[in-house]
Length: 141
Image (cartoon, rainbow, N blue to C red; front, side):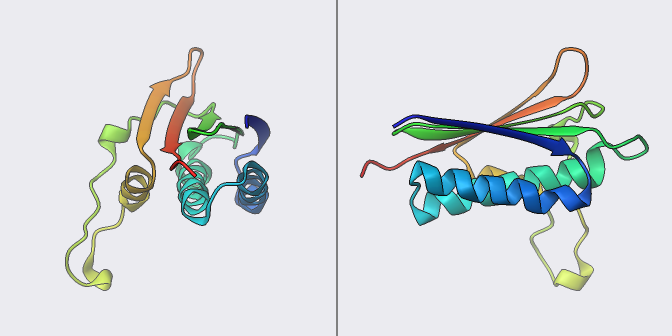
């Protein structure tokens, strides 16, 4: 089975629910098992939240494009924006030690994305922006 779905919206907090509903519906339509669907939704939520909360900071909000492609072997989630270029290597590593109240903020979203997905690639978009491609390999049924 092959499935390809795409949506886009403005990178504002009110759009997050729409983006998550799209991911939820696409995972269901693709027939993903609970584990794969959870990983795709969580990685998508973290990436979209980062774009909404950080990518366009200091500028007018721009677009977020979500493209989901599924086949029997994998799910590929592609997320693009037109925000200033971001380098994931510059994101601080998460502080996973100590009490929650005393931990330094930042980096946990990227940590979760890398833990949930099997491949994570980021690249600069020609003409400005970022493209994040995440792959979740599916177990044979």
